[in-house]
Image (tube, rainbow, N blue to C red; front, side, top):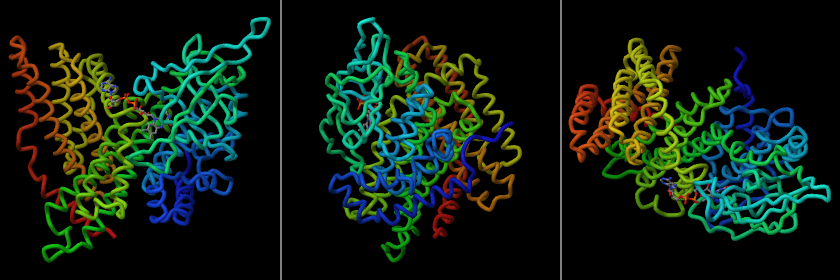
Length: 550
Ligand SMILES: Cc1cc2nc3c(=O)[nH]c(=O)nc-3n(C[C@H](O)[C@H](O)[C@H](O)COP(=O)(O)OP(=O)(O)OC[C@H]3O[C@@H](n4cnc5c(N)ncnc54)[C@H](O)[C@@H]3O)c2cc1C
């Protein structure tokens, strides 16, 4: 088997070190807060990071076009670090990657040579123009048109583009825009350069967070581009090109959730150690430590384990990771939001003031559940694909995962794999039962499925990782095992609760009462109250570990 794609660990460490050096120098907390307050994008810093001196974006580009050829794992690591510094800056780079992707995925060799080499040298900030005032989650409803321009012989020589794009990151500072527009044969991506007549920057958005990123409308009025600016030179490929990269762009936004959430909780932990109330540091109060620090910390660690596992599979050549990417994005961004919220609470009144970074992080991280597909869209994707897979495989999909957890429990009983196996089987029972009762047409049922599926699959990867660390005799295995067990217990509790919510919705239909009772009987047997045994003890163990951290 060939080695997974991507950089060596040392090379990726070097990229991260360079990034940390530059931002450490150029972006002290005071400047980050000023940029936020002044609603200002540090374009000079962005261009410096793109310049040959730093070349941060090169990690996203293949080697044959002057890039470093980073893999999904590298992109996730760098994204998490960037988001931990400033999510606005991270978003600027996300947009450059998103804008470059249609060229990477759909461009002809000549188009790649022409545009990617310009992007690689750092000459060009890129923007990705898909969203429109009337087309957000439903990309297929875009109204921007690209009408063919033909010569006297009827050969297509170019396109005339008309329309308006909304919420475009880098809209006001980009040199190159990749614009999705409807051609006669369906949507396609066009490269439009700044300065092209008819292209204008629209309104600057006064945003809730990520204020150091530039977000504007982009207006296109009779913008004429040559035919060679249609990516792939074939009309109607745009949606396919946009979907092709979701696997890792969703992971990237998931990494933003982790980076921002972790930065907030790190600050909360430091604060809780130094803030004295009622005669001692706040971290010594059990409720403060376990609720405000340990819970979000574990949720982020679990999300990271899932993301690492999925990124590795992408790097190993598994192209079809759209559902896994959706789970990662959904879990990690929601966990990042909860962590940032807990961090404000942990800071008390100070956390509510603009002087404290957690207040800004809380506003920043809010975007991660909205862009690159909202949480509702991720839930729809997760539920739809896993429901179909469960039905197609006659329950084997989750049963095989449960069996692997049984085996893991046999080897490493401390990581909570037994509870995950039980949760997976309860999930399987509910999906199958609700399918047979023809209840899957209800979005609330599907969303509840998605919540159970995400939690169970994240728990599965977290426990697998804890098992591997135990097998390697890693120094962190004890704490990771305790974290995994806590997560598994909470997974079992959440699965039981969600299963009841889902199944009891059947009770309004008389004819389904028996099947509802049968399903709940199976769930109760799999997940009895005893599954909660030891929850707070294991959380306290993790809490002790957090208190010892520098
Ligand atoms: C700061 C920022 C930067 C952005 N950068 C870019 C960029 O660079 N390029 C770009 O093209 N776009 C960008 N976007 C756009 C972003 O991707 C969209 O805002 C997002 O996809 C949601 O679309 P919408 O805002 O139109 O919301 P809508 O699609 O109108 O959704 C509104 C609400 O309804 C929910 N909803 C929608 N459909 C369903 C459904 N079927 N079932 C249940 N609930 C549903 C959504 O989850 C959401 O909660 C950016 C947005 C922001 C705010």
